[in-house]
Image (cartoon, rainbow, N blue to C red; front, side):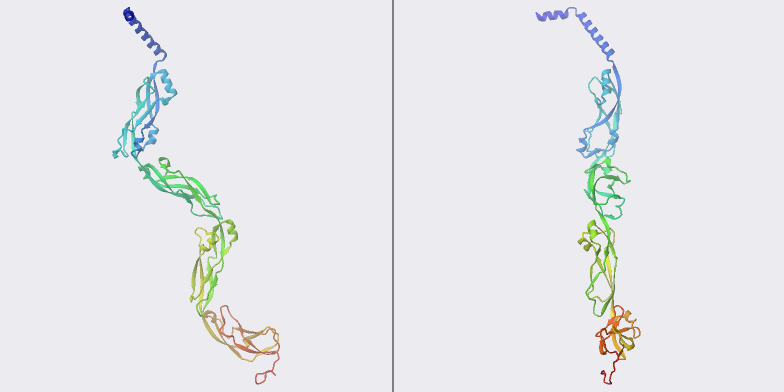
Length: 430
């Protein structure tokens, strides 16, 4: 009965009911289009790249990424006014993208070539219609993704203040692993850090940013991935002082019958670096030179670094640290002289004196050049009579000789008549 009643209700006045429904739908559409009409909006949508793992899994990368990341897609969207207004408030609801997953990366011909890829889009719902968009294709350029290790270099500017010295700086780390497009990696000329030494007066460690340069000396750091973007630069800086190199201590004797005529050394001072308290305490150094057995003029060289290190000092960069010692040697010669008594002086007494001998014979030894300057008329001989009284006395002859000359062997003995002494024919006093 119920079914029959429902069917009867539907059939009864069916035509009028259909007309009423149609009229209601038409009125609804008229009202909707009047209050919320369809409109077309224009939107600039940034291009997005998706499924990039397809690149990295195949050791590829997008070479023209910066250009793609600044690409916008001009989209014309048709939708009810309320939805257009919603897009205007939040344009991120529209997405324009390129999908890298379908690309076959087994073809090496892709390297460096422009590959056109269709731009796709995503809408918030089916209520939106894309009437047109541009560009509908973009070109993408691929390159191999590689890594390589590079040393880090230091660009020095300025110098430490006067009175200080710096050694070569050290780096930690000293190398960096750089990854990126093969074409960009191959273009790398150097990786450098800048170090200004102008104000540094003590050993200092600074953290510095790495900068990558190409062959044209242009910075390309932002196009690459670095295993580290910084390095620690340690610059050793010390006080500078000048210490005196003292005269060398001569030990040993030259060969038989040879004589040292002079000793000289150069340089006379050395520039050193070290702690201030050490530099205040150590003002000079000296060293031994062993001349045992030498028979000719000889130059000795002394490396002062070991001795300086004993005092925790180092030679300043590029300063000389080798001391040259010149030891001049001459062969000794002898010269026989017969000196008249009037060349002999008695010193240390005011009494009159005379000598029994008319002359003195002696042998002088010394360098040949010195001996040439000595003869019977130039040599000065004397006897020391200090504290002696009148009498007939015997004394050794002494001589005032140039440096390096001496009386050879036992000095001769003369008889001195001090005061008014009379001598008998036998040579005795009366």
